[in-house]
Length: 398
Image (cartoon, rainbow, N blue to C red; front, side, top):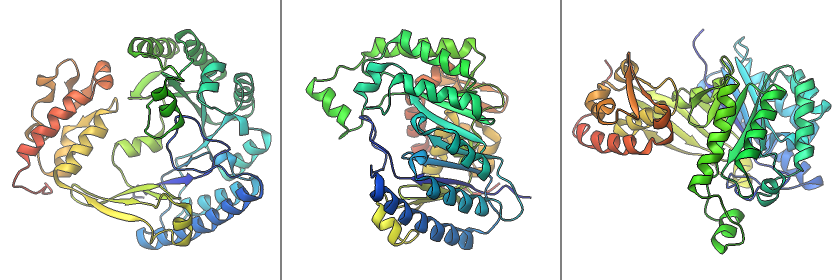
């Protein structure tokens, strides 16, 4: 059976917005949440049917339900959405190899766990971010550190599948010692995957405004480096491997769905602001971006999406950029088969120009650990090279 596309589902609702977040979401509650979630679910049903008729009814290889906060959905709406998604995923007689759902710890209880298990969800991605009280307060995280830790303990005791925890570094009010303890705590509870994200200040967010006005002080470069090293050391001691710029896992616990993103495999997306990617010929992709507007999406889920083609040197560079984010790196043979051009001809000998950042290992370019932290330098060089090498030619299958 051929590999089916994956599916991303965007849930655009949160109980509250974190101070650093610029993802598309809103914060209804009570009857307003019930109403908005009902409209979202009806639109999902329409959109799934449209995608099935356009791209085929062979199910989905992996599923990722993100947001927003999927665990904030009303219980009945979540259960119905999971049933709808599961039915679509299993069409064609297949079972998804992985089904992930993002949850905030504060929402996790036995009822939610039972709902997810009954539907067939196999993996939880839990957004803890920090267990330091001051960092949580300054970042406007919901729940106290003690409450969050207590919910993680519920997951450890009741969830039988794989689970991941998101942690952040560079937060205001955070310390290297505290982050090391956070990593130790989630590892000790049995999380087999940790996403370790550096705070990025996005324009227009409350935290960026607070930092600009001086009402919040952010860690400097040295402090952020200390934060990262403290978490890194704990992860390495526990046997975790960095398999992508921001992701660490025990062997066999890598996120299969995210690997499909980094490989530029096919995936479809439902929900407002979701982005899909489908191969449209040798070295070309069809990029489908759903409207980042709940009203527009609910009115016409597929018609409100924008589509564009990514091909030529843009597709080739994106392939390199995504591959170098991972420990697998870029397979030179796969690149040539996909784009009809040798990677060495397209980008030049990156491993010779940046020996401390990129190495040639067998048939692959692989970023070193230092390279994963400083990918910008070789990528800027590669982009300049491909602008020259691709001039006057089109990608051809080989």
